[in-house]
Amino acid sequence: MDPLCPVCHTVVRTTDYYCFNCGKNLHEKPLSTSRTTEIMYYLGSLLLPPIGLWWGFKYLKQEDSDSKRIAYVCIAITVVSTILAVRWTMQFMNGINAQVNQQLQGLQGF
Ligand SMILES: [Zn+2]
Image: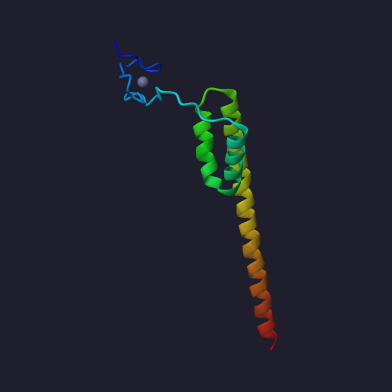
């Protein structure tokens, strides 16, 4: 007797990793929620902004509250990190603009 998918109740095979009908992960391999993994994900979210979102959604799909917390923190860090990156880039560009303007003014002085 083949098992049923817990979500859509389609008959699936015991060897299937995902339900072919709805995509439900049948062999739940829970994502690690260890402190080390958590910190790695937070650092990754901080340093590589777009990836943190993907991790966040991956953890968001897990049922346990630890994963959910990691998900929210990853997403929050990613959002903050992105905003900071945009601001720093703009400041950097403004800095270059200011320098160029100064040099242009210097040239005009001659
Ligand atoms: Zn299914």
